[in-house]
Length: 177
Image (cartoon, rainbow, N blue to C red):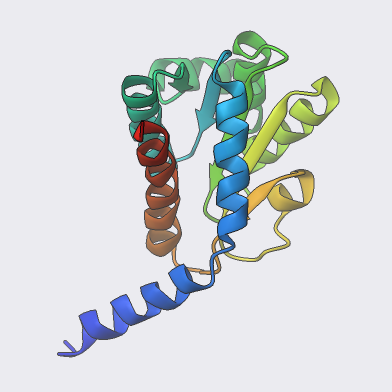
């Protein structure tokens, strides 16, 4: 193994962090503040589901903003079985979202069909939503999203780590009195 592996790895990480459009993160912060009298629904697949869960717990507990992540395997498999995996997020939004809620989608690639279909549904129903993605800037989810935060990396772990870092930075900012 290369002795400089970690130096190279974290140097790349720093480059990605330095290129972030932080004004987009501030836009999400403002959307969250605006939605605080309502609720926030956050969705992710795989590691994104655990990031969504962590963020939902912290935002609810620290900032007292009702935030729900949908990472219950029984519900996911029920909706996926009945409506197709590509529609379980959309169906969940149908059941749980109200007009003034905010929906957040996490997708490393931005090409997750379940997130894209849900974003299209939000557009039709005029439900505010925000996407956090990586890989290609013009990915399908970003193209559907009026607002998004893009992470310029093709590494799942880098994208997911920055998704979590960005979301938790918002929690910390909201905690400042």
